[in-house]
Image 1 (cartoon, rainbow, N blue to C red):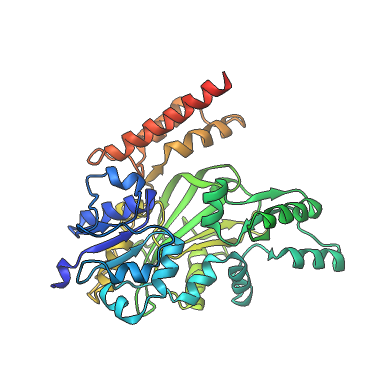
Image 2: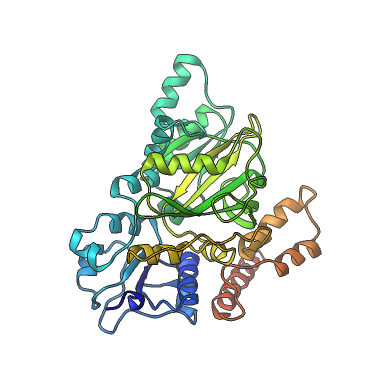
Length: 405
């Protein structure tokens, strides 16, 4: 099969899988979408179900066994969830040949998705980060020195699973006594947690550095974006953001992302090099107002919610991943288009309402921001996912109003 006709195989659901499907379609790359209940994606004009006779992949299925039975000679693999990434990184050689993908090693994937392991790695690599301790370590530190955290929260070792079960990314706690109590409660429910120092600052203190590292370990693309609003307010997802100029992504200026004496892009490069990382990445940092340093919070080692926004701003990591998997030339990096905004209304409306209570922007200005910005689900040339999502959101709101009435 000629390299240019090798299809892609997208595994995952929701906004991420939809974004990957749209990006691949822009390049005329055929793609199957084989996950059961693909949510947003199944309503898209770019949705292509797996070949006839192929059962959709279910979360929890043995990926190697499922791929072994997949009725295709070859396909480039795009795992869009942590569990799928971990399974894909551990495929046997024969399946990696049939389903090529440039992915981090299994050990690296385990390090970045397990927040306790990731915290230990950041200490060893001397990467700026908030202090992260297990419950036992926190108790020992307080007992020995009386030094707890000024402000802390409980963070799941498995973020994806915790968010799916509880609808939040973390749990804020007030002091060591509450931390110990909540740790015990969550542990009894099967949730393994760590205690992490809370870095103070507004949503705009969060910076994301996304991009691609090729199979030889060279950073081939960098995209920076600043969070402007988020929901839920403390530990939520970005709801409104702006693209920035960033070195390595075709821009000559680093002034948008680097403060004096603190270069978050170089911090991310150091992190990737220390890990021996390859593939798609998205790193979240937060500027600590106490010392002015951007500190690493998370690293996603796969496509993320807003991967299509990165492509529209000039950094197309899905195309790079596809070409690199087939060992084809990647070409030169393209120029980043700074100043472009993206909004996700189902999250941004409650984010705006929360800010409004603290003298936020008027409704008409918020509406103007929404109208001017790009959106991850709504597209004029692919409207059905956005229409159906809006219907679900409005329907859910009406049901809550009726229950209260």
